[in-house]
Structure formats: C-alpha cells, structure tokens
Length: 99
Length: 512
Image (cartoon, rainbow over all chains, first blue to last red; front, side, top):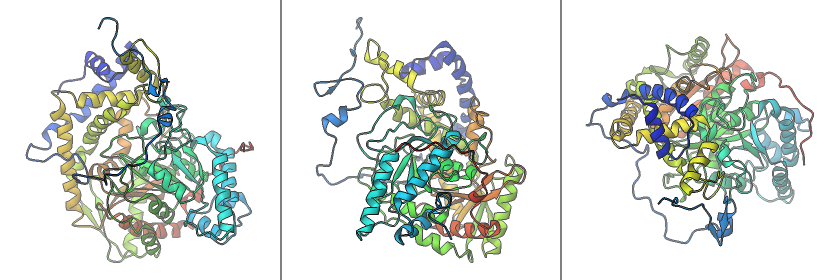
C-alpha cells in the first residue's frame, strides 16, 4: 500500500470538511504515514475465504413496535442551534456565488 | 466500623456500605452527597477528574431520597449513593462536551438511557467526568479542557479515555462512576488507578445517548473501587432498550449474586486461560510479577491455570485502528455547526462546516477522521476496512477456540504502569500500544473486567489484572473477579485504593 503523501492528506481533509493550515498538513501527514504503515500489514493476514465481521453480536431485522414514541418538541430541538428562524435551523447559503 | 459523621471516612466507604448505611438510617444521602462535593472541592483542582460539578442538582436529588426514605417509601438499592457520569453520556440540563471544544457549553435536550436509569435508581449525579476528546485516547491528554491527573502520582496519566471516571474513584471523589469502553477506555484507566472497571458484552447496556465513537465497538459499563460495587452499578445500567437496535434482548445478568458468591475466594474447578500473546516481551517486569502472583493465588484457591494461544491477536491493534477511525469519521460527521455546538460562520454552509470542524476538533480527532476517511475511500475500502473486518473474524475464532479450554481468559490489563502525562502526546503509535491487551475484547464483543493486582515493586504504581469471558457470560467476570479480589485484598489487608497517597487539599467551599 502506498504511503500517505501531504497532497493526499489535503484532499482527505477537504472530503472530511476540516480546514487545514500548512502546519497542520505537515504535522499530520508525517504522523498519518506512520500509522498507515503500521496498519497496512493486514491485507495478507486473512484471505478472501474468511468472512468479514461488521458487528460483534450478529443481529438482523431489529424492529420495534410501530407506536408513536416520545420526541423532542421543536423548541427543544432548536434550543442549542447556532441560529434558528421560524422553527427551523438557519444556515449560511448552501451554494456559493459562482454556482 | 465506619463513623458516618466523619466525611473522610464516609467517602472512603464502598458503595455497598453506603447503600446499607442509608437503608439502616445511619447516614443520609444529603450528608453523603455533601461529603463527596466537599471532597471534590478539596482535591479536584490538581486531579481534574470533573469537567462539570452539579452541586445543586446532586443535593436536590439527595434531599428527595432522604424525604422518601423518611416517609417509608420503598427505594432502589443504590438510592442516595452519589455517582459521576462520563461526559460522553448526554444528561438533560447538564453540560455535555465529550471532552471537545466543538460541544463546549452544549446542554442536551434529552437523557441517555443510562442517565435515565441512574436517575430512576435515585442516585445523585455529582457531575460529569473528564475524558479524551470523543473518547479518543488512553491518557486524557486529548481532553480539550486539560488532562486528568492520576491520584497515585499527579504527574502521571489516569488512563483514558475514561481517566476522569477512574481518577474520581481513586481520589474518593465518587464511589461509583460510569465509563465507556471502545478499545479499553474503562479497563485501562481502572488498571492504572488501582480501581475496578467492567466492559459488558456488546449490547448489554444501551448506547442510546452515548456520543458515538465507533458504533460496532462502543459499550458503556460500570467503574468502581470493588467488584461488588461494579456489579451493583452494572445491574442498574443493563437491560434491553428499544432505542438501541444493538441492545440485547436477554435478562440483566445476576452480577451482584455472582460477586457475592465469588467473595468466598473459592476457585475450585475453575479453568483460567492465560493468553500467551498478551504478556512477555514489552510488558514491564513489575506488571509481569504481580500478574504471576495473582495466578499463584488463583491456583492456591483451587483454579487450574492453562496457557492458551490466540495467534491473530498480533493483528488486533492494526484492525482496530482501521475499524475505529472508519466508524468515527462517519459518526463525527454530525458535528457540522448546523444544529448544535460550535459554529464558525463563513459565506457558505460548506465552508462553515470546514472552519467549524477545524476550530472545534483537536489533533487526535482530526488524525482519526482523516485516517477513517482514507480507509473508507474508493480503491482502499477492501484493502483496509474489508481486511480489518476479516481479521476481526479471525480474532473471534481465536476467542472461541480459547474458551473451549478455559472458563475465563486472563492477561495484564496494560503492558506498563501509568506513564507521565504528555509523554506520548505527539507519538500516536506509542499511545495506541496502551490498549494492546484490551482491544481484542471489543473486536469480538465479549465482556472484560480489570481489577487491581497490586503495585509494581519498581515504581509503586498500580497493576491491572484483566479477566475476559465469552459473550453473554458477564457473570463469570463477577464470580471469578470477586474471588480474585477476595484473595488479593486478604494479603493487602483492604482495597488497594486505601494505599493511595494523600492528595494536596484546598479548603475551598463548594458553591451551593
């Protein structure tokens, strides 16, 4: 597996929606490369005949009774919002000027 | 005998003793709760186990218990016994941060299921305990609000992520606390603070309202100074919850009766399997010595000790550090500055998210989100996440085979005694090694306990003894852990925490 380059970290940071400064990228790309090297040993350990475990205790089709449950009142749900208006979360514009 | 009029004696009692004294009318919950609030005021400056103390709420809950008791109302066993809650659990009306700036000042509008159960058990909530940010860490170095210090040596780590919950116990600031264990965050702090911590079978305790780190690994559990106290709290926390789709539909384990049965110290007929791969090289001499002595004690009480091999454990740490970041990167997407928490406003919502997450997350959180985003990205998914999930199957198979040879499996909980705060903060890989012995249980979903094995001779710091049981067999932890505790404390003349050095105290009064 390939090493994680600084440019890879920059691209991943965009995907993960985290602004990073040049200092952040320098520091994190070095640390992340070391981590990726350490975890990259796995591919050869378990062959394709070994099934994947996504969940430690297997369960399927978990359902509950189809009844109305308690839920938050709109005012409670909005109480911690950075901005709210007319019973809704208020956010800056979704699309930029150029869109 | 405890003189309950003396706060310094009261706070050093076990939760079981407190419950009995409350029921017998020897002490009131108001007295007990005030004694703990005073203790927090006196010692928590340098320890920093708590992020938030709710003196008013705790005393109100205590007074209500006292009034009901005086009126002859039937009350739950732990009614009136105060508790601390890890800041990963949401608490209606009480600040909840998960150790992150991105949630600073957030007041949740609802209670986690476990919070609700604690309130229904009528236990006064002293406050919220410190933790590594979003439970990512083994030292509390990664708390955005400053680390917790180990009461055994204030320069050292209290473990993590639940360092606050463990330190609060060792500093006698609370008799019981709640933790969460994704890769060892209950057991490793218990190990390095000389306390007891239990990670139940995955699904045994509802995760509803626990701020998720890695959903297939996270499990909440009890933290205490004795096995019986952990059992009492386990029974309060456990049980099916329709709000958590992974919640088990089985009865609450009889943890308390198992702990009481174990307290006889008899291990006749019990088969104990020592995991070869979790010991030896890389484990500190004093850790190995105390572990071997504990095994000798078990043999002396009638146990058969066998060695078992779990060859895939060699890959557990690597699998964990792919699965955890992958799940965490997804879980933490909700912190986007839209509905709650921090917002750093920019022209568009997308730029607002990126600026908010840059300002709100610490370095370790950013590292793991980037790593998880990478592991899940197109072209790498099967090589990384897929491989890790197949290794997870191998680890489960190792456990299944080992449990055919033994009733429980054991190892040192951590390779070393607590190291200095800050020592590994810029070396993530060295930090990750703390959890090498605890991670396999999370990958397999099985229950585990850490209990004190004594102090390492070379540094006088606590060593933890880990017990693992098959899934759904949590009672074995309490049965065998109770016996091990009885055997070891017989030699020590009392709980290990009684040997912890005195802490510097301030005389500041708790604001009421």
